[in-house]
Image (tube, rainbow, N blue to C red; front, side):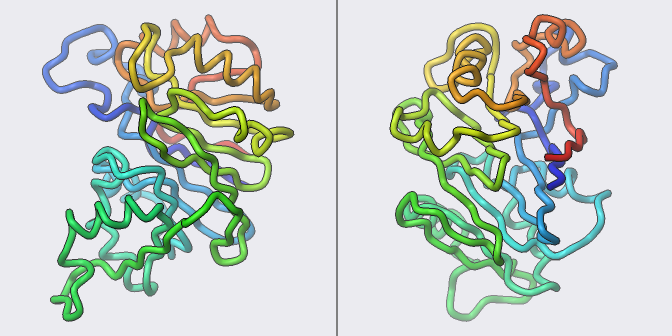
Length: 252
């Protein structure tokens, strides 16, 4: 399995508009963070988690290939704002979006032109595949295990594929979901900043959750400029934890 980080930033991205802090003005490319998303190539299939407002920019210089499935964590704009840019991928056929029912309703309201009976030319050819429980399901033969995650008071989804798990916008993971994450090799986990936040784990909380899950290695994502410089903060992490950055590719 090859995982490519398409984006590792929070909802405002880094640099943040109007900010002149040392992170937002950094010349280190690792401090330039588009909104959080990953591409997973496994068993010959191309699976993407979330479709950010930066999707076009994230995918433009990558090989143009069929998207076999897109897993959506939740309906917040920074995770679904790029769906209209799936139009070119309709050349390969329908793009299946795997979503919970509440997310499906939200997308139908926001993008009604994608779901009418008689679509006009150029509308993305997408289909909503509803995840109605937390049982494993298959994306074109690839098993996916949905993980319940709580984002403030909002239930959203993380996903496990093989020995890889992706959990973003985490405030906490219900205790009954932890067994789904045991014995994984690689964990991707959100860590917004150093200070506490009402709806996201901060760095210390994310480190504690990683210790509880106990993967071989953890990559942190969905970071704001308030996390600090990549080159400085990475030195403060335990040896089995790393900050992800846009464009990073890892093999699981």
